[in-house]
Length: 152
Image (cartoon, rainbow, N blue to C red; front, side, top):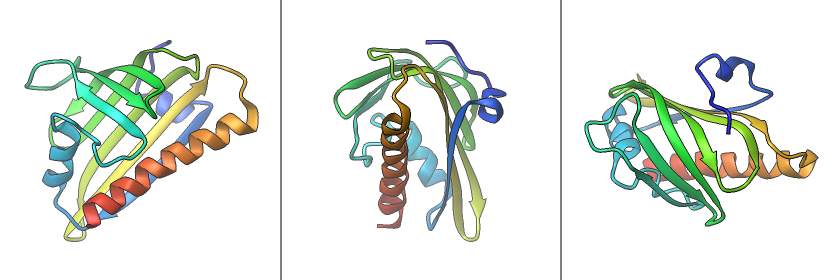
């Protein structure tokens, strides 16, 4: 896959952003994002694991599996401890995307925190409306599971 950079989050052919106002501290959300098994609360994520040793930072790598079918190799190119992580997908086992990245921004807000989760991508295959609808459902499910987890 082709790498993405910070500018791609403004220029990508497809972008989805979810702004989640959560009733928990930014530190709690950050701990969830950097746990041994990050995003474990997301039902569609079969597994997510860091493949780099701690302490994490720019250059940290991770593996993720979506629905047990799509396997991704991720590399973080932005890491602001306690606040922001951004990664590019270096490789995938299926040609779903030509380029793909995610950005997590965690900020204090109203007695809790605001978690802004952005997906930016360029499709790799011509899946048309069906592919776009499937991506939208996957991303919305991840956001909904995150909202439910931190509210519960």
